[in-house]
Image 1: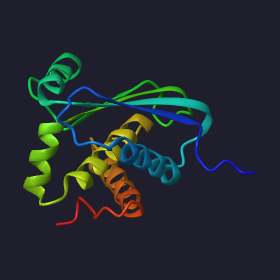
Image 2: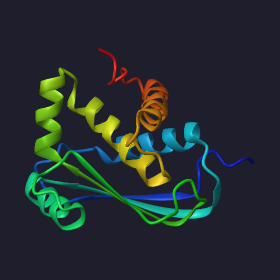
Image 3: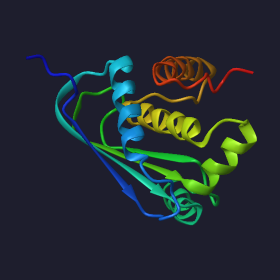
Length: 159
């Protein structure tokens, strides 16, 4: 029988009890959809952690690792080379609950849609995608849009 899921173990860790319940399955679904469409070279068993935290902890992580004295919606900490093989410890993604809530309200989208978008966005960073140049942004945003469409989430970049 053919394998229907990739050999990736996804650990969703909740560090803030105020997060809505049952987001673990949605996070896994988002990562697996990104794997299916980004088509990285999967070389074996892999591990990814997704930390659901709050603005205070995210602020500290952003300050410590990026030198930015503010919270942010999502941080990615890749442990593989950009566009390298997907195997072993892939890295960590952290999301800040209060920032996600505020941004979803500002954008007029559901919390779940915004959460899904940022999990996909963070995972694409783990794989090596970035948005530092217009060309990189167009490639990453286009891929995000295609992945999100498979998950029933509207294009977050549409005006």
